[in-house]
Structure formats: C-alpha cells, structure tokens
Image (cartoon, rainbow, N blue to C red; front, side, top):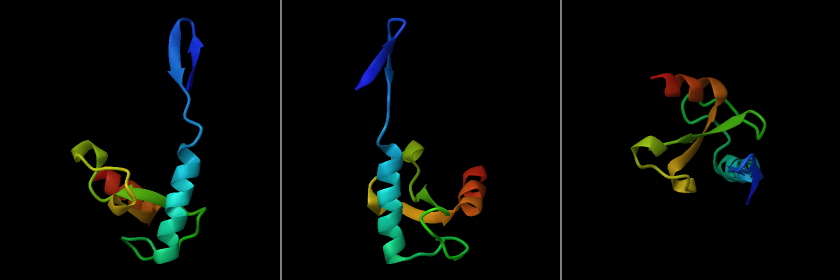
Length: 79
C-alpha cells in the first residue's frame, strides 16, 4: 500500500499504532507494571521496549517486548 507523490512511492503505515496498542494490552494483562521502576501502568501510560534492540538483531515479536513507563524507556534509550 502506498501513495505516489511526484513520481515517488510513499509508504503509508496505518496499522502500527493499532498493533502496538494490542501488544501493550497483552503485556499489561500479564504484568501491569513498568519492567524497570515497577510503577503501575495503563494502556495510555505504557510504552513498548525491545529487550534486544532492533539494531542488534532483535524483533518486534511479543517475546522480545516489555512494557515500560515513558521515563524509563527514554532513559534506557539514552544509555
């Protein structure tokens, strides 16, 4: 799927947020706390974090994901 703009095909990703929301919901049902600081999370306050980063060969599979609060996820990304 995509749009052609000035001769270039632009990819449109309409389902990513829906997929991420479903994965966060699935992880929250198992453990509704941040993996790092253990604060309680909701669907609105949780973020997905890759255990093994994509840049190091990790995947987007549920087995490679944990939920984290935005603060912890950002701090982890900075280190």
